Length: 250
Image (cartoon, rainbow, N blue to C red):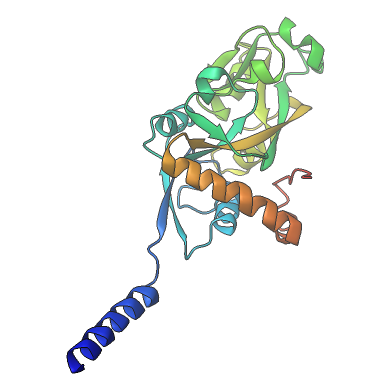
C-alpha cells in the first residue's frame, strides 16, 4: 500500500511540474527590407509593434532578417523564413509562388508619381504608359497600375530621384510614406525641383511560407487580426500610428 501511494505521489508531482512549466515560445522568422519607421534595422517600427500586438510576446518571439525586398520574398518562398510583409494582391504569379497571403490587408501603399514639372506635365494614371518610368526593385507596379510592361527598376529612392533629375526617366513611382521617411534623413537627396502627385492606394498583405509552420502563423494572424478589430484594440493601435491605414473589415 505504501509503495502504491509513493508511486501515485511521484506521478502527481511529475504531472504538476509539467503543467506548471511555461510553454516554450515559438520563433516567427520575419524576412523584410529595412523600411525606416516601419521595419527598422533594430527590430522596431510601426510594423514591428503591430506584429507584436498580433503575436503575444509570451507565445511568439519575433526574429528579424533584413535584406532587399526581392531576396526577402525568395527566402520565405524557400521556406527559410516564415513571413514577409508588404506584398500586393497584384504581384505576379512568380512573386506569389509558394506563399500564402493574409486573409485581409494590414495597410495600404499610396503610390505617388515623382516628376520634373519643367519637362513633364502632372501625370495622369491613364497616360502613364506614354512615359519612361522607374520604380523600386521587386515592386510589380505595372500590374498594380495596369501597364503593359515593367519600368526601369532601381535599388533605392535616391537612385530614382537622380534618374528623374538627370532626365533618364520621366517619372519615378514611389510609396508616399517611404518617400517621406527618406526625405527626413540627413543624407537624403532633396526633392526640389521635382514634384509628386498621388495616383492610387494599393492594399498590401503579409505573405507566409506555404509550410506547416507558416500556415500555423498565418492562421494565428488571421484569427487575432479579426478578434482585435472587433474589440476595438486594433483601431486604437492604428490611431496611434497615423502612417498606417487600417482596412475596413466585415
